[in-house]
Length: 220
Ligand SMILES: Nc1ncnc2c1ncn2[C@@H]1O[C@H](COP(=O)(O)OP(=O)(O)OP(=O)(O)O)[C@@H](O)[C@H]1O
View 1 (cartoon, helix red, strand yellow):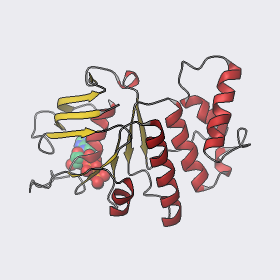
View 2 (view 1 turned 45 degrees about the vertical axis):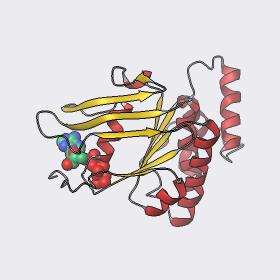
View 3 (view 1 turned 135 degrees about the vertical axis):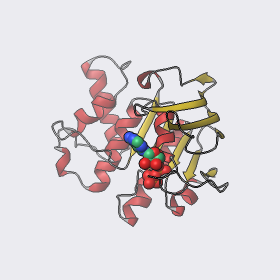
View 4 (view 1 turned 180 degrees about the vertical axis):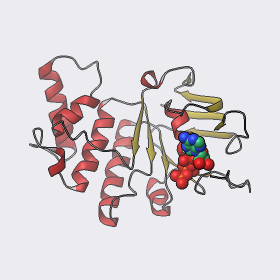
């Protein structure tokens, strides 16, 4: 699986794009890192790729996943998973029901769905916590559960928007390697926005600096 961005640019409609057209090819199992000054448009770019661009923004160029053009598809048809720093578990659902919510629709039947969630909980080191109230989980457990919920949808690419920035240093390293290990095991391409050079080093893929050609970020 490969994620390709071809001359991709994004901007508020009717004005200059936020950054020069971007060309990028992220290979299967690679975590590519996207860095750049605040306000340059990193999160907006991820939203365009995932299909969650806010009203009023326009996108030009192409997003190709396994050769298929994504920009013509609605977000739910793109099979692109998103993990961001404020990813929270739904407070009114148990931990297991949170994961079940993410589970791909093609897993049918109560028993099969329960088994898939139990297996995911085990992979995330959360065995036995199906019925738990998410509020009672530790920060690391919550982060692993949120990532598992995203992965259970069986995405063909993963977008990470500063997903570790609210975790302390030790947890950050743990959750980071957990996330990257899953990207490698599933052989999906991943694109991560971060301000932390340690994240980029750990990702060990390409690093793209938006706005590195001297273009000033747009005024906020
Ligand atoms: N809903 C919105 N309406 C209008 N402008 C917006 C909206 N969301 C973002 N912007 C503007 O678009 C530009 C890009 O924002 P974006 O959040 O993508 O930047 P970023 O590079 O991810 O920044 P940071 O590193 O601070 O998260 C900024 O100038 C921002 O003010």
